[in-house]
Image (cartoon, rainbow, N blue to C red; front, side, top):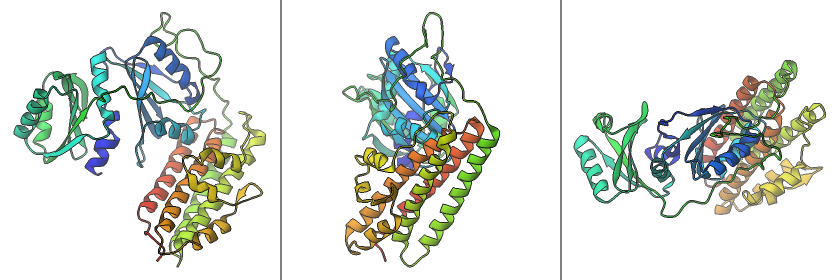
Length: 408
């Protein structure tokens, strides 16, 4: 893992332990807006950590407002930050997916300091040994540093907290308790060459991160920190149909296996790019067809949207989807391949078109997959299917990074 990726992607996930202890919740993702409403009413300072296998979403809150969000997966792939993070969680796990949530209340100075993880341009420099670490920490303290200083050695990290120049303490990867001693960081500094990342608290309060779903109209009384200690209302748990869940899992894994084989054959062909686009376009159609097939027996009474409507919804983020031709509300995959072939081979636009279209098709596929995952009642089966989809998406994105700049 590159140091830059660790420093920029995982910083918001490096949370300390809460002095007052955390509170456990189990809301469905569609119930998170209720939780956020209660936290806003309490002017909550701290973090809300949501686990919906294989994903972890961290929301950092100040005065009850979520000012930062970061999503990562246990199966790898890109870490998403900002509004894309909760949106991706809902799209990939499904709005009805249950989550294991933990509320971590922090004192206001500590919560403010942790917001330095949002620094878009941290100072990054190499560091080796305890002497360099002590000199660096003295320097940032002398500069009245307001933020965090992260030391990264391989996959291990330690964090020092400064609130307007005052040392709040430090903690590290295998002991999240904030302590006044920097001894553990000193030991980390002797473990090998490392990287020091100095992050500053934003000068202006960040724009609150919206949740992609509207809150349900009815909310239960009480909430986190209320007098009666009641938890947020939960949607009635879906009945589990083991036979149906098994069929959905089997069909989904079959689809993923076949699209991988088709994509491998396309990648080895004389003209890989147009053939890969055709394969992904056909797979997008298959995923929407799968969701449509499940709709008549849906206990959620899901209505599968037309692909044209989903394309229109996603076009602001994936403008190249406007280039798709539809036939009977399905992507005309052969026409997409021909569209790519019509582009000039020496034009940079050919490469941009390929990458942009692949990402657009992935977004369409994940939208349909969300509907499919929402039909699985057993959380264990749903987690397995979500993990399989995440691995497949990561493989497509990985191949995209290695794609040639133009057709050879």
